[in-house]
Amino acid sequence: MKYIPTSWSVPYYNMALEDMLLNDSQYTDDYFFFYIHEPSVIIGKHQNAMQEVNFPYAKEHSIHVSRRTSGGGAVYHDFGNLNYSFVLNKKLGELVDFAKYTAPIIKCLRELGVDAELSGRNDILIDGKKFSGTAQHLNKNKILSHGTLMFDLDIEAMANVLNVDGLKIESRAITSIRSRVANLKSYLADGMDIFAFKDAILKNLFEDSQIEVFELGNDDIGKIKKRVAEKFSTWEYNYGSFPPFSMAKKRKYGAGIIQANLDLREGAIGSVVFTGDFFANVPVEELQELLCGAAFNEESVRAAVGEQNVIAGLSTDELVDLLFY
Image (cartoon, rainbow, N blue to C red; front, side):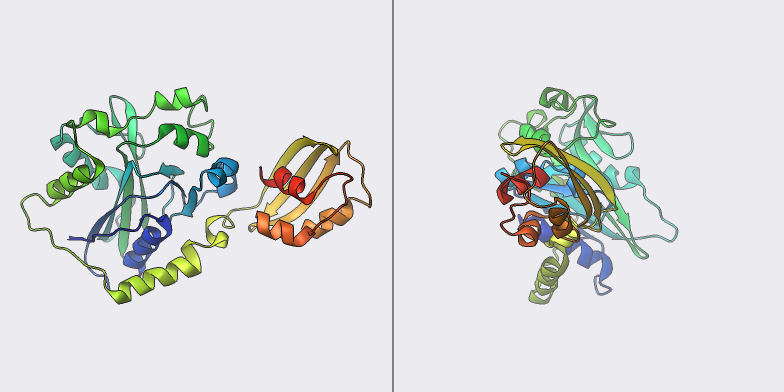
């Protein structure tokens, strides 16, 4: 196995690196690397970003939203979270197996004095509290197994930016989330920072073997940047990749109580119907027609409607607020 040193703190680059190692035939070895991100929400391959992320909070705090290639749930990253990825050659007939690929990490943690254990489907716990989530993705020849390690994560920010499914947690209150998660820092030796923690895991993972380093060359970095530009940083990939679903947004403005009833398809507004106690300067259907087909993001909506004045007293800024905030 070869270790790849990286320094990207924007998640799109590390998602692209994983994709390159998984799918480009020239990368024939087994690989391992770490990454630490700026505040980010990483959503699973099959998730709907519109439902998983508190977008007003994410926008206010400049939090990235990035889709990964593996399944599983949304997670929050910041500078207090250490993330790792294994990209390994797959054995014939191999299926998703969290126990197998979390075992090296659990072994490392136990040797650092952390009594870690795999629990449920894909979580690693200490004292019954979650500090790590893992996810996997398989293609014909390789397996990606990656995970988070909460070292000194901002739990309050995590609770605010993630729309936690009620099936996963009884209460969305921050106090409830705090009771279910733990940061590793309080379980490790005093004075150990996240970089020393990373080095300790790396040394333990390779044991007494010489760490074989794979340095990314200019060609590799060029491929990664191309993937970022064409896929991993795009709205279409991170937000637009969701199945059809419906939602209703309701607010009160000077114009009255207004509800937008939306059907979203392939990242765009399939249909929208406005209801409420408002008055209209022209038939409200004109506004509904303007919005149909627009990508479901603020910029596209503004471009579609311009400085509309369909609903009396409702500005375009308020319309955007209704739909997105």
